[in-house]
Image (cartoon, rainbow, N blue to C red; front, side, top):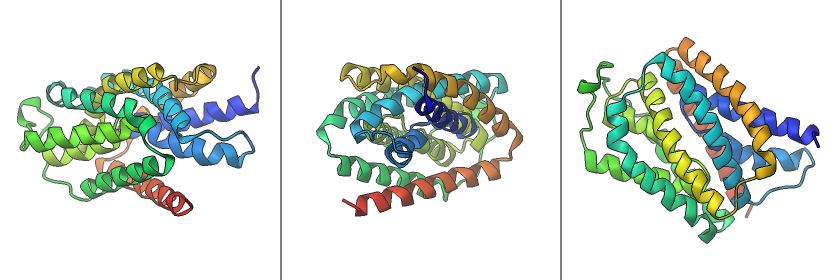
Length: 260
C-alpha cells in the first residue's frame, strides 16, 4: 500500500540518483546516511547498517544505470580506461559485498570514514589534465592504481556501493583525466561493478524487494536531472561540490562513531 513512507523513499532515491548523474557516484554514499539517520528521525522503523547496505546497493544500481544512459549521450566516457580498471573494481566489489556480514556496525562506519578521507585527499591533489583523447590518458602507476581501485571497491562494496567516490579522484590524479571525463567514465565502471555488488547483496538476502519499485521511480528522474546539471557546470564547480559532499558526510559519520 502506497504511503508517506514510500514518498520519502522516492525522494531519497531521487536525491541519490541526482548525485549519480551529477558526480558519477553510485548514490549509495547518499542513501547510507539518509536511511541511517533521516528515516528514524521521521518516526519510521530504523534499519540496521547491514540492511542499509542492501538498500544502497539496490539504489546505486538503479541510479547509475539511468545516469549512464544520460552520460553516454554526452560522449565523455573513456572506454580504454574502463577496460584497464574494471577487473580490479569487479574483484574488489564482490569481495566487499559478501564481507559485510563479518563486520560490526561501528567497524563499517569507520571503514566508511576512512574511504571518504582518502577520496577527499585526492580531490585536493589535482594534477595537470591531458586532452579528452583516449590515447593520451594513460595510467602512470598501474599497480598502485589497481590496488587503490581494489581497496576502494572492497571497502565501499561492504557498504553497498561501488567506490565511485574514489574512482573520480584516482582517474583525475593518476591518469590526468579531465574531471568531467573522470565522472562520465566512472559511471560506466560503477554500472558494471555495482551489478556485482548488487548480486552479492541479493545472494545474502539483503535486497529490499518491497522498496525496489519506489527506488526506481526516484532514480529515473534524479539521474536525468543530475546529468543535465553536470553538463551545465564547470569542472571547477564540480570538483568543489564533490569535496563538499565528502566533507559533510565524513563529519556526520565521525559524530556517529563517537556515539558508540
